[in-house]
Each structure stands twice: as structure tokens, then as C-alpha cells.
Length: 420
Image (cartoon, rainbow, N blue to C red; front, side, top):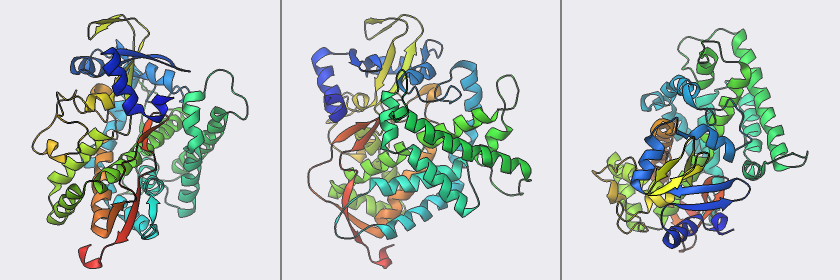
């Protein structure tokens, strides 16, 4: 229960009591071997991909993901799928989405209540959902866009978070897993209809292809076209992975900023001066201090030794992202919020891992960084934010995401238009 209610404190206390690595037996998934020392982190995330399988581990933890999702496939199949998708998520490829982020943020700002406590997370979810939908499956008809957004919101409701952990064994019609499955099929049905629509029409010259276009033109490892089921699985995976975590990261960034007035003022000045370096450092420190994901997992295919301990084949090894980010050897006084840590310094690949690492590093990392940059800059140019209470919000575990306990609650005051 403490892991759910206080995941950061629980992991720190357990490491302090048992050292590294330690084992957590978490019902109903089973035992995890938790590592956070740099050598083990490097080996697990960047070592032999045939020894440390990410897809199989994700499939154990998230059993409701379908077998064609890029999160649960391994080996040549995963490498082929990643090569297909990666060009759509490079920094140069997401530039065309910047205006979408800014526009959706402006519209969200107009709906925020003024001079009273207000949770940012639901509105931030709407922003990031709109962006990932535009990137993955851009639908021109506004009525159809709203219908797709509605179906995705239902699929990603709080019920889904319970399903991610509770889906085991036989599913009754009323179980969270069955409810999630029903809602996922509704998204699949929309994607199949969109596939049929696109096959009936000719692409318009100049239209930037979205991920659905890329998948339609993609193939399997054997060179055969991807079937509709595989395409639907991948679309749903990208919508899940590219939506909740980015909104959580934004909620944490604002939660951190408003409780550190000198950081807030320096960030606002940097935005006004066009100093992107400090804003980038702020985002990196926020992702260090409050990462939106709790872990990166791998399953061992053979016996290995990590941090002097023998780990058997078939074990799930969990790189604890919060523990990695709170090691005093890399980050003195890790509880302090100091964007200056990242000015002129890039930590090693085993010291800063909010997007995982190695061959399985999050595909959407560049998109998420761009979204955070644009949303924070737009909001701080248009509104004054302050905490609704002095106490910081605690992290709560929701599925595999770390969310602020009060959903990033702030008090909003409009800024004069001359400061926009």
C-alpha cells in the first residue's frame, strides 16, 4: 500500500534498509528486482537486447496490451517497427506540431478559472491528447475529431489505470479489464473506418503524413504489408504512451515552478528574452525531480549478475527512475529543485532516464520535450500562477505513471496583454 501511496518514499526507504539491488513482491505481477546504481542501469538499458527483453517484461506488467504493440514485441520485429516509426518522432519531424501545441494551449487558457484553486492536469491532458491525435491520426472532419477524442478519453479513464494492474485470469463482463477492452475496441473501430476512408481517396499533395499514413505504407519484417489489426494496436499504443505521461510531466513542472518563486521569475525572464537554455534546464530538472514514469523494465533470458547479486533467468528487472534521479553521487541534495544543475551540463545516460534508454528509449521523447517547452512558455507569458497551498503535492502511483496527488492545483491570474 505504501508503494501506491508514496512510491518515492517507499523506494528510498527500501533501498536504505536492504541496499542494492532489492526485490519487491508486488501482487498480482510478481517479484521485481529493483536496480538504480549506474553500472546496473547502463547494463540493463543498453546491454544485450537478447538478454534483457523489454517487450516480454512490458507484456507481463501490462497484459491488456495486444501482442502487436511495439511495447510488447522484441528482437528483429521490434527493431523493424522502430525503424518504421522513428522518423515521425525526430525533432525535425515534430516542428510542424508546434503551432498546434500553442493554439491548443491558448484555447485551454481561456477556460481556466481565475482567482481560485484549479487542477491543471485535466486541461493539460486535453492539450496533449489533441497533439498526439494530430501526430498519429489526423482527421480533417471536426465532428469525427471530437468523436475520436471522446473514444480515447473513455479508454484512458481512471478505469483503465486499474485494468493495467488488475487484468489477470478470467475476465468477467464487469471487470476493469473488460471495460477497457470494450472501449479499446471502439477506438479500433474508428481507426479501421479511417483506414478504409484513406484507401478510398488519393492523398492530397503537400499534406504532411501522420503516423497512420506511415503504418499503412509499412511492412512486417518479412516484407508483407501490416494488417489492420497490427496498425490498430500500434495506434492505440502510441495514443496511450504519448498522452498521459506528457500531461503528468507538465503538471509536475508547474507544481515545481510555482513553489519556487526565484525559479518562476527566472523562467519568465528567460522566456521573455528568448533564452531557451534555462527553460530546457528547468524541464530537465523537473523530469529529474518528478519523473512521470516510475520504471523501465526488462525480463532476463539467462542468469546474470547485477550489483554483485545473481539474478535468475525469467526475472523482471526494474530500473527505478526516481531512485536513479535521487542518487547523491550524481545530484547533490537531490530533494532540492535546481534547474542550474543542467545549465552547460548533460548528465550521463545512466544518470537521467525519464524516457528510459538504449534501443527502447521512448519514441516520443522529442515530441514530449517540445510540448513541454511550448506549453510552459505560452502559459507563463499569459498567466500568473501561484500555489493554492504551500505544501508540495505528493506523488501517487496510477498504473505505471506518477501523478501529483492534487492534480497540479494552482491559482491562476491573467497577465496584462502587453506581457503576452
